[in-house]
Amino acid sequence: MPRPRRHRLVGFEPRVTYFKPAGIMMRELEESILAVDEFEAVRLKDLLGLEQETAARKMSISQPTFHRLVQSARKKIADAIVNGKAIKIEGGNFKMVDTLRKRKFRCYDCGYEWELAYGTGKPADCPKCKSRNIHRHPEDRGQRGRGLRFGRG
Image (cartoon, rainbow, N blue to C red; front, side):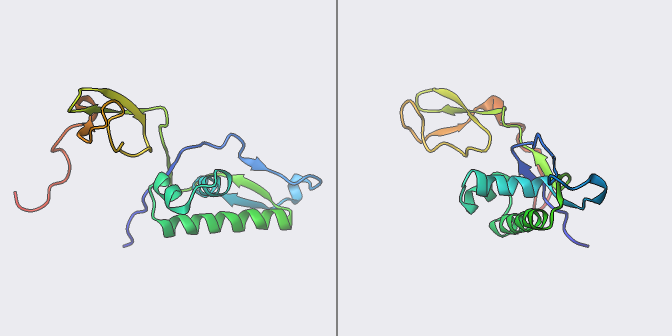
């Protein structure tokens, strides 16, 4: 039995999900289906110009998986443009990222507290005193000890 696929994180929901070439009647039109995760991969790599490593991290997938997504999406887009097909964006194995939520951090040396958006990584130091003794705010950590346990007992 194959491993279940991980959800790819998508930070931008497409507002337009159908593109049709001009001059071809709808009943004569073939469609090329572009998955939402493929759309996101092309957006990050080609539109935003992110490096593959950074873009893969944003989507919470490996670099080879990201590369396969981009290649698949580019092939579908090229096929649609060259052969006069419509592009329909739908489906895929993805989860929308809540970009409005923020994580809270606290400096345990000076007591300074601040927020950062999800997906930006852990800060290297405190913005106020430059200490490296920083951790997630206690209110923002979730419950400890509720995950899977390994070993005995």
